[in-house]
Length: 333
Length: 184
Image (tube, rainbow over all chains, first blue to last red; front, side):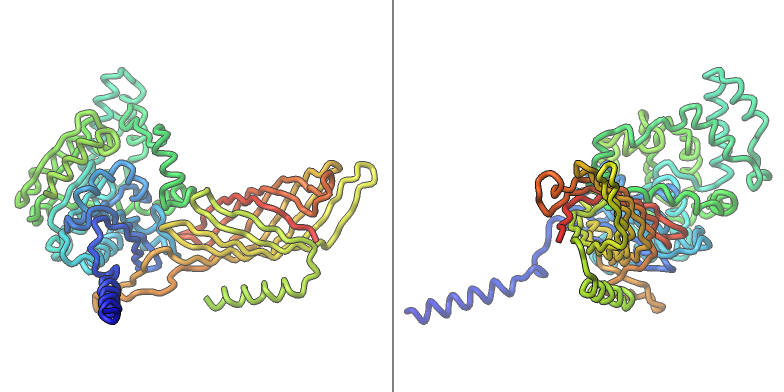
């Protein structure tokens, strides 16, 4: 009898050992990956419901912003999907030794292709959805209008971002001019009237002057750092290096002065066939609602969903977090 | 990696040969969640006692090694030959001013992949990088041997550093340090 007990115990022990970690499907994913490409080490933090077999790839704005620093507002999505927070090169917590000459749309597009490919390799069963915000929307269009990239993803959500530099700056000026008149700011009105935006002058116009007035006229009065809980979370619970965030901006001079001014994806949007959602903060002056309204008719071959966030400016996920989370969940359902 | 191992070996030899006067051991980190430890072996190279106010002034050479973890970001090691000016007042108040041309080696705190030409990925083991990290530190504390006759001081320091290269340029960083100095 004793021998049988010993044998049974041995079998039980063996079966327990056989069920190692690798066989257990974790309900919640918490993984940190790094993608090394052309001098940059770019972190991708994957977090959320692994059983959903869905990944929302958050493509942050900026350029030079961060992904994980918005997790405070996006983590509601993690209950229904995994969220992949990717810090682009020379942004957030990315590190390495990077040449400024790589800070071009084409390189960001290549990085994004690799990020998607790596996620597909790590999670072969998962559907990938893009969630681009602001500058991240430019990268989403760059990615989707290149080669057969769109076949790699199941849908794209774009949040307050542009498809065309000219269309964007034209609408920022229009927005600012309207606000200047409403607020009876004659100095702003005079400046804006003296600086009309045309397709011919986009390469040379003083965009910063227009942009500055847009901000002065409350184009985006929301500051993340007004929320103490956010600041505490950023300082103590984020993988970001405290001062890194503020060093990236100066590397993007070429982007601001040359590369972005030639950005025009309007004629290519008709080639997109995957579902697209346009999420827009209605009060935004940074990328006004009119840009979103102009985007929809260009997506002639995509199923387009629109969600307006009436009480939001440039970051609807900050100002209307619950509604935003719900909109993402509905789109990926 | 090779450079890092050489540096460790150099530090070990340095610690063995030096006629050390004290060991400094403290918490080291950017915040409480980016935690680490720092150890230094302090050796005075010049000292002077002010007859009028009994304050002690010293210049110290201190090879040091800090190790810390910034979760989900990197694990860092900082090797520095510190040059410290220390003043201990008549009542034991301690003031440190330190400069160090430090060597920084970090390892990414996650699985790293690099794209291959054939479109697949290869895993990069011990991925990370090296950087030059000049550091300036200012610290205060109390020498407990003055009033309490204990061979011990407590101290706290603010380290201001510049990591170079970092992305397209450099990164300014800070770290807090707090601990004890064990006098021999």
